Image (cartoon, rainbow, N blue to C red; front, side, top):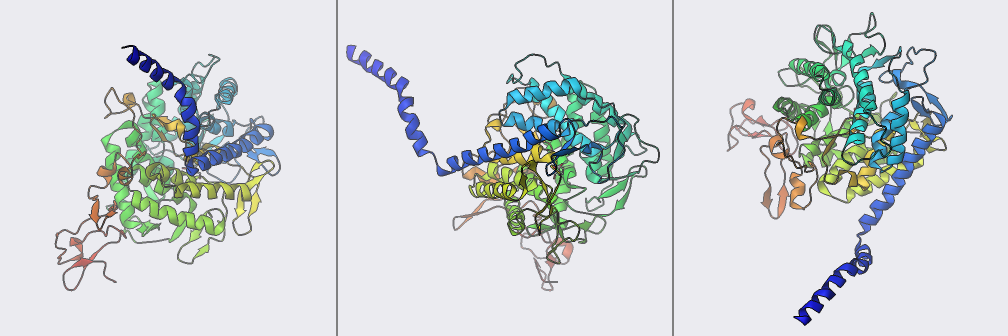
Length: 576
Ligand code: DMJ
């Protein structure tokens, strides 16, 4: 008894002091990747603060920083349009870059600066300004930034210590949301692209808008409705989305631009890049956030149509929504978000192969050019710029979350090095005007702080996401997935990360939605090699691949090309 008691005491003593011995040996065992990630995280943190502090010093409270001249631009009304629109004389900006930085400050653990920013915005921001703004841009940057920050300010982590937060950011968001509503007052319910914050839709306003302009509002406006219990915002965004979806062709394709008064298409050609990109993203993310089956049905059909008509191996071209025939063979830098979206739905194989091509283009030029003509293998003559866009970093973050393949850490490192080498100047980070000369332009876009730095930071340090479940808006602002907002999650919902895969085996089916997107997914172990079928796969109608006509043939799973019926009556990828 005496013996066992003293043995017990030794054991307790050992357990108490052992961490001191264990800790150093654990850190010695630290993988070289862990050290690399810490080092890279610190590099990204420095980048963010270089951009942020220069903005605060030379531009705040104006909208964006001009890093070369260390001055500012009041760009709120320029967004979505290159011409500077009319602004009232006494306009001093809406602190756009500060709003866009809020969630990044939290993710990087700077609650003090977050609180300072929240306090300033609460006391000074107003939307009662005679400014014609772009609904889409203002929604994703300002409304999304405010809503996400409000949630981060009021969640259970008690970030704000001074106790003077009384939902001011939510009140501002609600005020802004109200100013959006006149834009939806059209015969179709599709919103105008432009609305004056003070006076509503201007006389003779253009009725032309884009697919993403009216199809990417549901996350922010839906969240606003849930937070305020005022259903008008979600209803307006949902009505627009449903109308847009009803305008799809029989191939489940949409165009790029349309008329909001007639509900007719203007540009029938579309792809996954500019003018359309976030429409697909929001169908999928709206399903994740709100759990409505409707969103899933729309997304699933839309996604399969993209894979069927736009995809060519790892590349995506544009096609005519009426015929599905290829129109433009172009790579645009916005398309680089697509692999990230594919990770969310579990189509990892396809995501990985496209991501590699985008990274190859990044390496070729040092950064990714806005538009590259795939058929002529040359840059677009007027779109050689790189405005510090986040999309490649975003996809890299998602793919690393899903696979834990250290190769993505190397990709991230390469992106960070290029950004520091080519775009860092004394006064911040400057956009690249021409990727062939690396000549710079005097503009630091707010999404550099909201997205580019955030996704790079999360790639190297995802501690913000541990045991929490967020989706990121198209502008990189996190929104939590809550059972109270969700149609399908049980009341006692325990968050699990949708994209996080812990073991080797899970990496292939990293998303909770894999099975839904890829019903034909099959892990086949032939000679020890596992293959994952792509979501574009449509099997031939007969298992023995015999056919009388092309209609009986499906879509090839690895190339996503349509199979056709040969003279001998077999489906295959015959040269036509
Ligand atoms: C961001 O403002 C958003 O991601 C938007 O959806 C399109 N891309 C820009 C940044 O490139």
